[in-house]
Length: 385
Image (cartoon, rainbow, N blue to C red; front, side, top):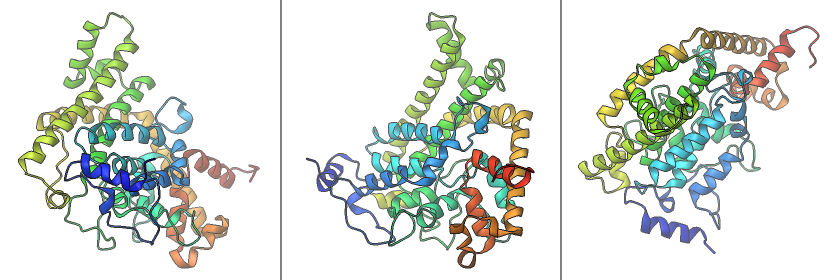
């Protein structure tokens, strides 16, 4: 029978010296007993999976609004894909897969309905009242908004998992580390957190490309203008003995993910050796060490620019995003004007948290589907309440 102490011993023996080992966690906001059969990070993972906010990711937009089709990625399926990619990077680098998994599972937990358009509108509406940023909201969710325990609010996650949420960083995720938080502004997070940031980028590049092809908003002709895609697609077009274009596309996307994972592992390992990293303290005092090579960065830049111009800026996606912003704005204004329409548990927080923040929390926690239904209930005559 493997107990927590055995798990900690396995980490000591098999993980790299600069990995985040659960035995040395910086602790929790609220005192709690150690779990008998799970490490600190395994318990974090389980608490995230069982949270309300995590379940709601199933009906939150990635690029396409939920009702556009059941086969498109949602925040939940995207999150699962990020977990898989992140663990595939952490294992060969001998880093802590449990912490990597916990951070990956929680990295989008603060997202609004309707993707980045929902976040942009809430940030505009909250101007002068603290703004809105989904990493900050994610930390708020796990620290305050989840209600599962008698003695405290939140999930009481470890410092390292919470740091992974607030420091998650990609081109679309810019963490706001201020004096409000206990995380020093000028330090790098754990390598496990850095992995999740890269895994997120690999996932959304590859899988938004897949969804773009399925939707017909991105054409194969356009994709073949991207060097990294064209080389892979032409390669498999020659060696796969099939004329089935769908099979070649799927094989090419899988291979693209694998190529990027391999590049991150090899380049990061070289950087760790070059910088002579020998402890987790070395990690915190160095610039980010988990990274693509310069060549892969340049190739990915072309891919991201193409996705931006041909998918994210497609007129149909712009229509969806603009409509979503109107939904969010109208809902916000209705609740601000008459907060008595809020559910009782939110209404009870008006004095302690302030009207705008409570309304913001309520809307941010909605799924796409619930926001659409709530809009109907509030604005469509004769709609059932």
